[in-house]
Amino acid sequence: MGVVELGKQTHCCCLKAGFDTHDHVRNTLIHMYGMFKDVKAATYLFDEIPSSGLVAWNTIIDCYVECGMYKEALELFLKMEGRGIEPDDATFVVVLSACSSLGELDFGKWVHSRISCSGLDENVAVSASLIDMYAKCGEIEKAHLVFSNMKMRNLVSWNSMILGLAMHGYAEQALELFGQMQEMKIEVPNDVTFLGVLCACSHRGLVDEGKKYFDSMTRDYGIQPTMKHYGCMVDLLGRAGLVEEAYEVIMSMPIECNAIVWRVLLGACRVHGNLELGERVRRHIAQLQVDHSGDYVLLSHMYANEGRWNDAFRTRQAMRGRQVQKPKPGNSLVDPQPSMMMMQESSKPCDEIITKSRTA
Image (cartoon, rainbow, N blue to C red; front, side, top):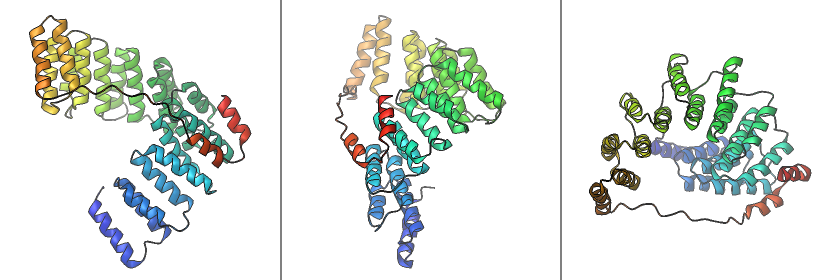
């Protein structure tokens, strides 16, 4: 529920009653503060534990991942390994999630070798996390290999593989996998499944198929589309040049459209040269988020393409008047990866598996 004050009051009651040193209470408090995004309080509670058990380590690592502190979460995992505490499936799921978010492929491969050492290769949750990690790190073939070797699969496994294929542009394979999932009738698709399917259709420009799946989602499975599903449809139609139809989709939404989806349509209007609709879309965006540099730049380019230089100049002038600046270019960074040495120091005697993983 995210009721911070009540949570703190309950913590005070635990202190007064002397329950704060109880393992289950302490671990739940760490988890609670992690959900509150209060990493400082969670870490303080964890550090106070004289001898932290596996559950406590899992809880604090999960806390760091939930708060977006992925690198720190991996460092905690290595510290846990150094203490000689054997990770379980819950540990690996959380650590692989951090690897996915950071794009840490080397670390992810090393974790995969640790999973093999721990005999958790066939754990469904761990395998699904491996699929997600490899897919997000660009190793879609390795993700598919893990998926193919699974003896049992759950909905998360199917979703991870479908989303991974769709994300890398393998639309036909993603839709084929979805078809296999439907034929087997082992798992019922959910909103995440259809998000992957619609994403696949969008990347491949499969307009008719996308419409069919979008309608099937509500008609056949009773799943109400979320903003992400509508965003996929707007992107699909926009890429195909059907910007007016995309606009109608937004206007027919039962929920209020956010600036991100409107901006997707604005980009499509710029690509396909529909200035009239672009101006309308820009007005909608201005009601939600006034000062975003991309909106001014896109509209200015559209005016310039039409030869309306005065309007293009006025748009740029309005941008400067509101002191809206384009984001600065990103910086490149060569990561020396000091964690690799830490990984070697904390690793178990699984040299053969680790060597195979690095060679692969």
